[in-house]
Length: 121
View 1 (cartoon, rainbow, N blue to C red):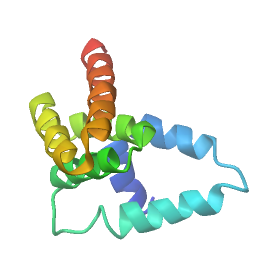
View 2 (cartoon, rainbow, N blue to C red; view 1 turned 180 degrees about the vertical axis):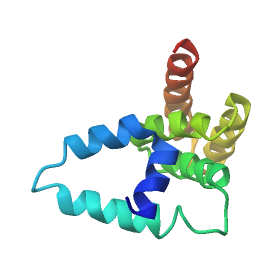
View 3 (tube, rainbow, N blue to C red; view 1 turned 135 degrees about the horizontal axis):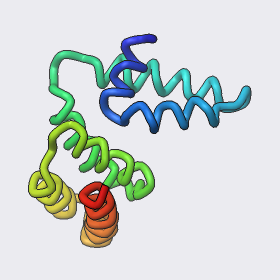
View 4 (spheres, rainbow, N blue to C red; view 1 turned 45 degrees about the horizontal axis):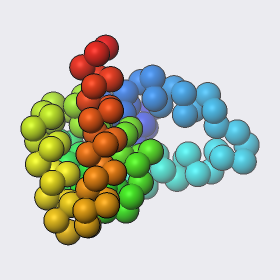
């Protein structure tokens, strides 16, 4: 297992990574390899920021980019990394100031759904 895959598993969880790998085809394999290498090994594994900080940054960026599907995955990951619902709320509120109310509104809706699911499990 590469350091990228180890970091990806630490952040997103074994279940998510196992499902992604099980759904990988010959066509999508190069993309999965690139994501693991570039995002998870070359960036997320760097020593300059801890995983919680990287997670909060990711939430803000996904909010700004209106990537609600990815945001849901990373809200669950943030909780796994110890980011509290209050901290997630603050990150999303801060992002909304710079990304706009519609992006913030969508992000809060996703976060409320995911946090309810996480708390219910």
